[in-house]
Length: 473
View 1 (cartoon, rainbow, N blue to C red):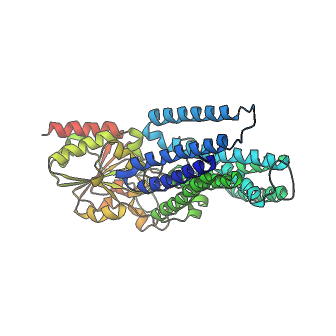
View 2: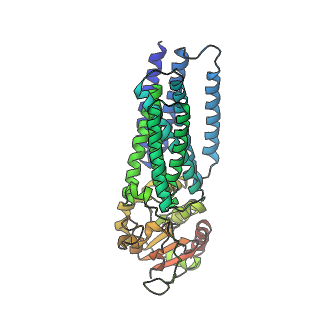
């Protein structure tokens, strides 16, 4: 059979599987199957490339390119398998940032090779391919270095936003230098100008991510993911590879839509996320006296007293946050929920769209703990339930339950839709301390007359509570 026809069929199959897999990812019950289908689609794309290369006789006699391709696949497959099996779920946001950066870096490397061919006169005189090569280099470099910076922020290195008038001026200057370098290359400059373009892209990507705080990283990762998709699609045009064009376009479009949806969930624009520097200000001192009045105090509760409270309730809403992820408390939280459910308590989970450090972070953690999908509710679904709720159990969440977002126009989180935990009859907050969240402001819910603070590492604290609940039976 014609190798070209076989490769085209494989490419078409991979595109269909990519689209179906992406659709299946929209629901937790089908997400695993969707991921598997997308993986099979990628396998089809690899097979199609092999058929096209070997069947079309594109390899030069004596070339070791085929061996290098196979070695690359084996090394990448081994690294991916090790990462998937051994990286902790709490470190998954960092891994996503690294994987996303690898995609952008690969696109930048491909663009470098293609430009070298143009510069040496080996490439065809195609303005579309030439423009796609430059675009892939810039966006791919931006995605690679920006993702590495995001990895650092997610890992706790330089987590807070860093902004200054000089930094903003420097960012504008570097952006103008980027445009000037592109014009320079368009006027016929060679590899020296291209290397300068990669260097300026590196500097611009770092300056773009430095002013963004750690809590805005979910949006930034999504945005960088869309950049990776665009870079991959651009290399697809340069290489005339339909699989790269289709997959890159899907990633770019879905990443852009997800970015806009997450911004909407925070009631902020993408420009506000990128340039406002939320989280750059000084951290407030919890409970300290302010301009509006004396110091505030929070009430603490013991595990035994909390167990007595839970023994007399009918409804419980659990609000997971990044503190639950760091402590890996999802399994013991599900154990507590199972005990209470067996006693007739109606247990639900309220998942804020930007809770955690990546899109869907809380959903993934709860799914790992085998929490029933029927118990998971998003913000719009669960907020009307709080007024009838006996206990709202906040585990490691902070700004997403801060009531000042509703009325304080001076607050950096003003206007952000929050979970209405303060409207519950009783509020239990599991947290290490009264330390403010990312926004650097006191959380008013800590000092609510209905709130009890249950201090400690989330996993240890909930385990003590489970023990106390069992002892009270």
